[in-house]
Length: 244
Image 1 (cartoon, rainbow, N blue to C red):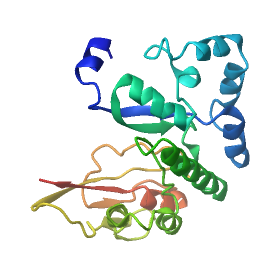
Image 2 (cartoon, one colour):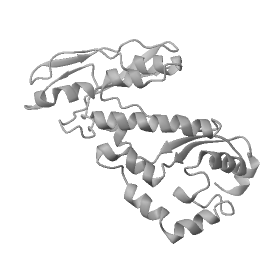
Image 3 (cartoon, one colour):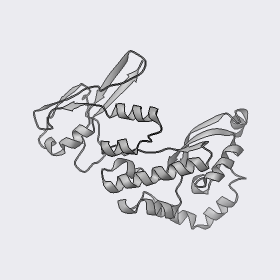
Image 4 (tube, helix red, strand yellow):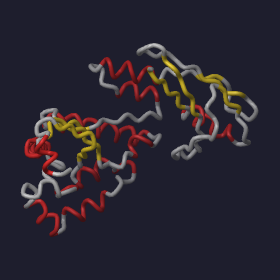
């Protein structure tokens, strides 16, 4: 962003694409049970470098051009408030540098790491005066766990996520059997329309690609071996509801 634009809207800027960094040692401990966090070794080498120290020393002078861990308030929530004041930013969403494996992997270790990160995010947000809000994450591979991880005090968020979990499925994930999905219960401005997208996920839990043309409410299991990944096929069905 150019400084003239920043000056024109000083104090009213809303940043929806900020980042919050865990310090390397904290990041390594956070990802330990999962075999490590993405890029943790890179971050560790970075903070031990001469360039990092030099960049940190002048990050106020070069506020807009200093990026990554060297930036003012990159990992220190109290410094983040100072940085927002200097930039004229009213509020900011901050996304993590964890790599998000804790949100995507179906394992107890990943879910524990997800909870650790969320606790970190809540503390960091409070220390930043809630002007910079670290984005929390919900691992959706286990519905019961996801529900317990929702903040109970935020009833609107809880209701919204529970609505998205209310999708009802019927049918066995076996070759030749038709799977069906209901829309569940949604609230919002009427009329509400719905769209469907089926995806296939392998037993390794990898990121599932969408099945071309599979956008109807019903889907036959058409490939031998799909029954082996039946739970993943069912669990990865997405239903999108759009309020008009």
